[in-house]
Image: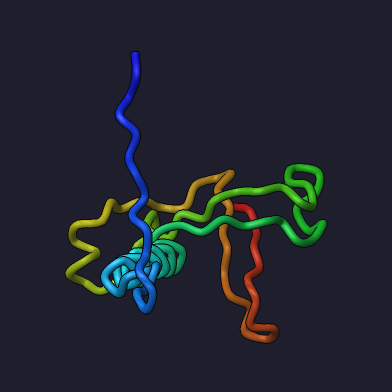
Length: 110
């Protein structure tokens, strides 16, 4: 079974091999991907790596985990708090917070 081959169109002198419409489509795709990643990591979930030995022997340095930023809706607006699931902190939960002194993320276990 043979598939029809698609011939590449040769560019003429003075013609751009990468048309503006194609460049714009690539730019839109890249921009929408960056916006999605920024929104997701800042508002929904974020991948983290344990930086210190503060939670040994349960969690080791270098362990990877995902932070769920929606589970506890304390910092969200009241309109969002009504539709987000309500849950209290339970034993075994990892709590991540921003350190006011260093400005970086720190964590602890409940």
